[in-house]
Image 1 (cartoon, rainbow, N blue to C red):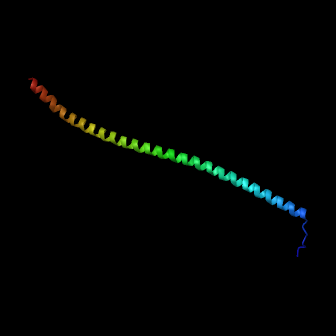
Image 2 (cartoon, one colour):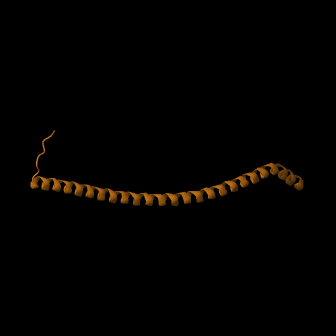
Image 3 (cartoon, rainbow, N blue to C red):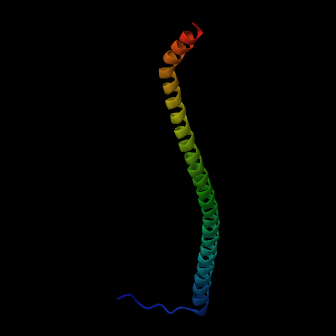
Length: 98
């Protein structure tokens, strides 16, 4: 059995002071962590909003690109039709001149 040592008021006061100091340090650390997390959250929210705006712009560009692709397809079909009709048009023009 460990013999019980009587603590003096000075020992108790020293221990209480050490505990208070440790608690104060822990409290300050937690305050710093909370503030840091708040700043990180604010930056993350800002980046999330920017990403949403960029996604919206990309969606709009995708729509415009789809329209341009459809128009290009239509132009290609018209050019193909013209290329197929051109020999006949030239032959008709030559015969009408004779």
